[in-house]
Image (cartoon, rainbow, N blue to C red; front, side, top):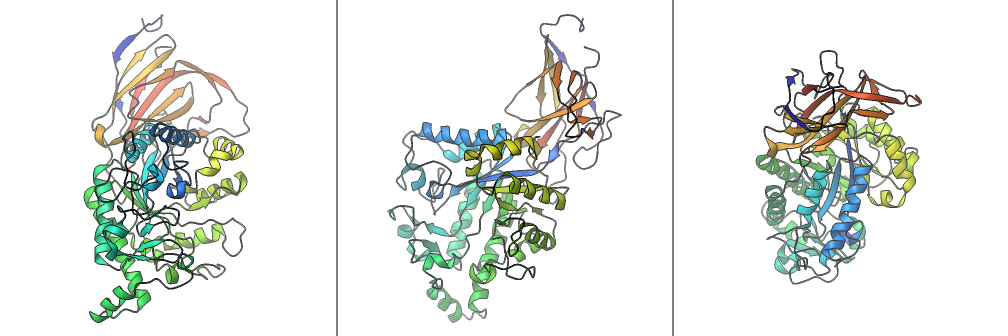
Length: 517
């Protein structure tokens, strides 16, 4: 019956649960040699401040905003990126529905005014990213209260609502005073509001702690009032240590608070790439420890983050700020073995970008990753896109799991399938759909394996019963790049697994189709 013409037959699949976790070690699959899906963090920043990346200008129609967002997400998907770091709070405002802060000027053209055709941009971005197997990390600027390109200070601004929390700088910026307890409570409420209400995969802070000196024309940060209160109350730290301690306590508190609510939500920071000059000895440049009062080395030493993205925006052969030299130094600070996924500029061209990706893979073979500043070069450099697609990002990849957050594997999926004349449709079912982020479909055509990472929003997948292709893996061994082999293979085995929100992969469910061909 199954060897003849089959129009549509629904069959409850015969399931073999293979008792090996394909998450960590090479799976024992009874001779099937199923190759594990690649693991690598591949992310790009999408900036909304000053309309750098999205939306292209304030006040666009909702339809145009959505069109631009879909274009960017489709571009990331086409290059096999698996994470978007999306700026949701550029200047004490919100690109999402908030009862704490006003709608962003960069979204609607008027701070405090919602989109005319109401929608929630963050909710939209999350849904569309997850459809494409892309994590969505909510990028927040914690201390910036007003950007110089953010139009006039509106009546909805924190500057008007809570002036006691902010100070004015000389270059058009306003800044929260990080030392104030009320500042820290306000910012923590914002973070936890997002974590509570949205299905995000991460919270992300960038390098703006105390402001860069240029924002205040080289003058010191104007916190005399809070500093004098601290001294009068018996404070014994010097001013610089007092400022650093304010930021340190805030970073630690944010990490702990996130984990109490949703342990799977990763907390990441992308500090300035140099901790201090002469660390290591060949490095010259800006001193974030002494100027931004950001003791970034302490945060990674203590494991107050889940992933670490120092902004290494220099080339490999920049002697004073060399990408691999700085990356090697940060690696030595990673005492708690958190993810170290460096930030790199990709407007240097495809050769530099790919070389930096390969250096990172070499240094972090188990859990590599890169975060690219920004998505813009991908939109205007077709050569870069082509080189990424044909080179290091030619395969999809799962986001590396975080062993310190969870080592419990999700339940294995079950599946039905429909056998058609030319294809087989796999329809998975998941034990805990709310905590399942993606699923992996492993397919063997004759002796050659392929895999596809799919969203749980995709209820089924059609596998061709015969396929002509250039394979990449045979019996778990990679095919050489210059191998011109092209085959026509018949599907004979399929395996599926589920991926939870921590990135853990279930044991596999195997389906034998060897008899239907």
